[in-house]
Image (tube, rainbow, N blue to C red; front, side):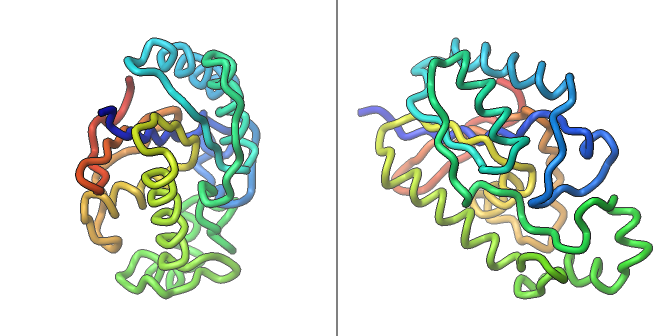
Length: 201
């Protein structure tokens, strides 16, 4: 019986990534490096044992473009899913974390605290975003039993998925760098997702 596998991929590098700006639900275009990395990842995934059955993507441009580039190498279309979006970072979007620490010290402290119900002004709470991540993980498990699913998403989504699956509290430092076009691979074992691989293929 084939195991269910889920591969979460962060989108390729964007202009705002290069400028160290938070994007959230705002968008900026992929850089040439981002386009190249997405294409290279598509070529690598083509050689993956067992292949890929289905590609999902955040509906935000940077992720969807990455997914299309990957899909072109796998001869697969891409299905948009809003649950794969980045967390809405509200007033922080377009700013660097250093800028936020300096200009929004109270909001920053609450954002990184253990209060999952704190809402970034004009943005999401952690609890709301956790709900979206869990919803997609449950969907992948139930709707793709024995399948191999690729989901192109964002650093925030992958960070939250890792915390949920590895039981790491949300107020603690994750200690893992999720690189552009990096991949986190999970296997469903006895109804629970388990981390199988992380980083590059």
